[in-house]
Amino acid sequence: MFNADTFALIAGPIETGGTMGPIIVNPVNGKLYVESGGVSKEVDPNTFAVTPTGFGTVMAVDSHKSKVFATSGNNLQIINAANDSVGKTVPLSYTPGSQIGVNNALRHIYLLNPAANKIEVRGIFREVQGPLVGTFSLGTGNTPQGIVADSVRGRVYVVVNSSGSYSVWAIEDLTSARQWGWGIGNGGGE
Image 1 (tube, rainbow, N blue to C red):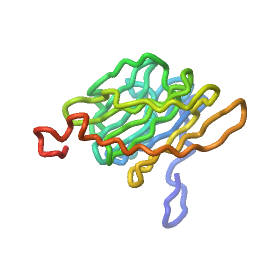
Image 2 (cartoon, helix red, strand yellow):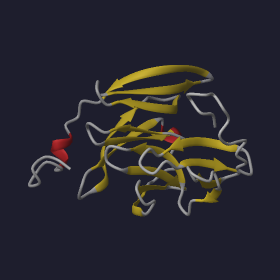
Image 3 (cartoon, rainbow, N blue to C red):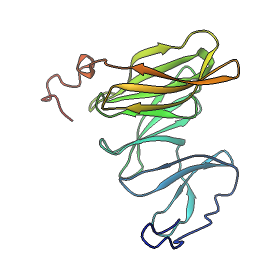
């Protein structure tokens, strides 16, 4: 890690103990989450010590709602970003891909289902965490590999592998989160 003002090295190399997978930073508590050697780990923002997380591999963070999203086998874990406690585990019928997209405006997360060539849309609302909102089917032979969401424009960008040829698809998600009940009886906010 380098100081952005002086370009001086402040820590590193930080040894994680294996082949690295995705890395995600949590701006709420400053932790860096890594997958290394098949184990989910966190890096302390002050000491840079590396320790196991006790939950699945972190795939996304929504700092606006103070949520961290991890996967563990066929489960989605919704974690409190401030204290790293697992608030909800949602069983899935598939093993999700290696990225999760977050649209904090719609309160949607997007999980890749590579085996079925689909993207699953789940809601992250105050009372109900992780209900299925909808599914985007990419069609036969179009396997989702990566995903990111644009909350301002209501778009999802997906890296798609079609028989070894990679491309990026733009999908509009203009589904109203209100239809899933988050705004009913609670003033419409979180």
